[in-house]
Image (cartoon, rainbow, N blue to C red; front, side, top):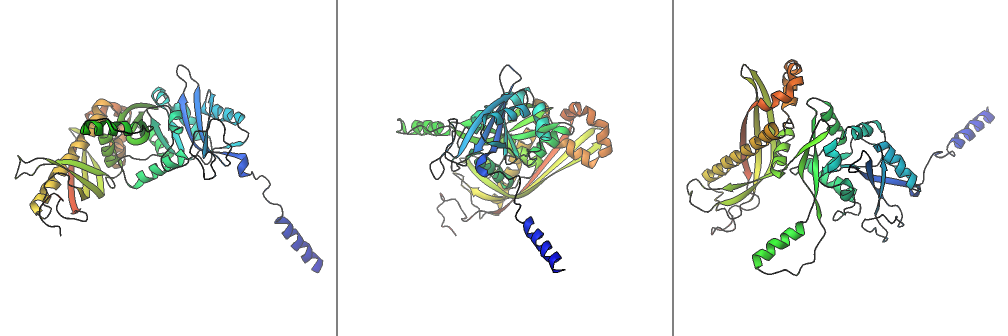
Length: 418
């Protein structure tokens, strides 16, 4: 019996000595943090750009990134081509001395040329390849995806990490509605086959600011030129696998109000006291600290009507040159009323753009009709592209100012602060 117990103990210990039979050392892996997909102009060839985090300071001659703590490059950019995304990935592996690991990819960037010609094959590859996660962020650009992934992001060593953090910030605050692969695929697959992504641009912000300052002071400024800055403030609209348009910053904000929530965004309005219509107008900024948008469909003999109700609780963030007496209840009520009118105008403009210009239902009408009247939706979904531009809607907004931040009246006023 003792021998049997001893044998069992030895066998149990032996199991602990086997280790991981298929392990890979980290320095033998090429960890892809982001990929960019472009179409080679004039052909069907796919250009793949991979941003790879460096584990050592011996990046290839294609490295474009910031420096690590030891002085080595923080990331490497590699490119490959193929007739499909999967073939381009295989060709990328043929260039690398390390195994290409895509399962840690956080971001997928779609170039403008590919977005306009169609992304159907790319979407199919992304769905089938188990290395890509449905939680990966996705965005579109007016440049090539290659240009975006070769651009450094301030304060971050690896640009993909910086872009991912920007998208994470959009989850709780900001005008842009962040989208992951799962959200994007689901909306493209379901009627009316319309989806959206954040839209990235490279802008020469430093040059524009310098130009404005030079105009103000009347002389050239002694300023060194800085590289272009990557900004995400617009939204790309996809319909039937193609990008059909880009929403400006105002419509992007209202798009998020309709599809998600106004919470975390802001609104700027030109305020004019009704009691003093001839007074100089001033800009007021309100931060939305809580809010909700409800879309309720209604079906009648006159057709389909969408009743849109948006409620927002705001904080008075900035009064600028506006002479506002925040201790006056009547004046606060006027600000709330003008804010409601401004938000209503913006929502109506965004819906009109969807119905008349892009003719794409990215404002959630079909989704709400399906949820409220599933039987009626089945009858109209095949003709929704023709019905959507004719759908009537009514917008109502309610704004409540909860506080005026940490001071009462504007600094320009002569009254002492409380």
